[in-house]
Image (cartoon, rainbow, N blue to C red; front, top):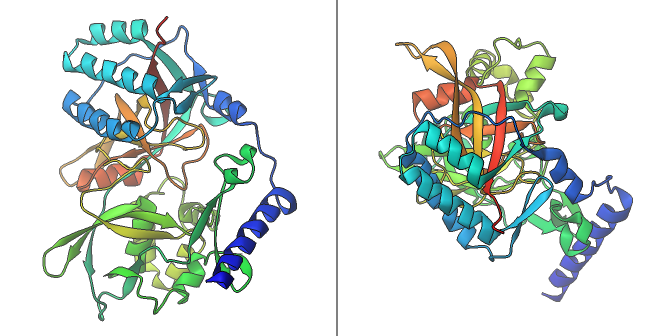
Length: 402
């Protein structure tokens, strides 16, 4: 035990040394990052219309209260250049909840928001106010709890030797910075990459949560972060995000565009699947271009966001957790597909609605990215697979009381 403790001590010391001195990147002041992400809206407000029912928003807000109740009342949230306490955020969302319970007319809603709430706009790509919206959903895959000739691709649980450390414990200006790796002997090393894991780095360690039919199913479940597994006996296992290996996320779609395997016009989750199905000899090459690897855990309910509450279809949003306040009430304007009788997209329509920042993702970085959770089913899969449109993102909070 003494040698083990010594090993951990060496790990932390080495980690801090490497981070602070050997390979430390230039770190922006935290307040500057927040100011670059959200700017107050003074005059040009959006039209606050909502294309969904208020019951779904009420459900999302009530889930959000569970998260906020776990925090201390003086816990701070940054809204652009301004700071609010958890108590203020809770009171703000309770006020909004009371407002929608009145089933307000569009005019009444618009008037109340302008009178009671502060509105902040995401600065978007390069400060142009445009936010790129994509989508994700809860897929359903056939699976087995034991391997056989059909089910031979494992979905792994979190390994015990996966270690993530909070660097702010060592230096305050590293708040939000973490490092993930493993200890091997007296060395602290990056955790195994996707290619290394696919090559058997975790084989024989009894980490398999379930087995899937295809490595593509496994990879897409990693991208979505959660899913339902339909077992051979008819039961359903809800699999949710547990941890990541700490490697950077690389888009396989981007790789396929760069290699001219797909065109920008045809790019979608469905197009990637079709290509990989037709070219099985290239599957591992393409999947391994993304070194990030996700580990899963069984869930008693559906998908859970990074703030620890269930996601609400159409109402939960994933944003960069280092830039946007977690659990924030938001308003978006973007596009959604209309499907024909055969499930094909026949047109895109602009929509707007209120959402809650309840999740994040490896590809969701910066003030110009947002990911909508669409739920499950054919429409959710199509919307999530094809949505890649610019839109607008606003964050709301109640004005401070005098």
